[in-house]
Length: 64
Image (cartoon, rainbow, N blue to C red; front, side, top):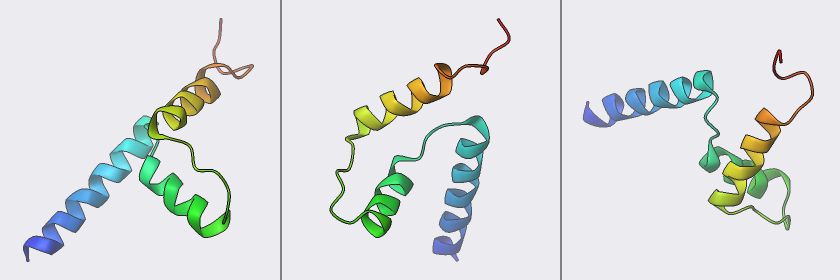
């Protein structure tokens, strides 16, 4: 019962992070290892920096 509750709470937390736009480093690492074998995996800090730059430095991402 407790593992099921923990899994449900983890899923809810993952969903909330996605809704809020918080990058998911663990998911990124799993994707890189599965789909881009031999590709360099960014560090957590580099990943966060890249996601922030992507979010805030694209043309048309803000009104002013």
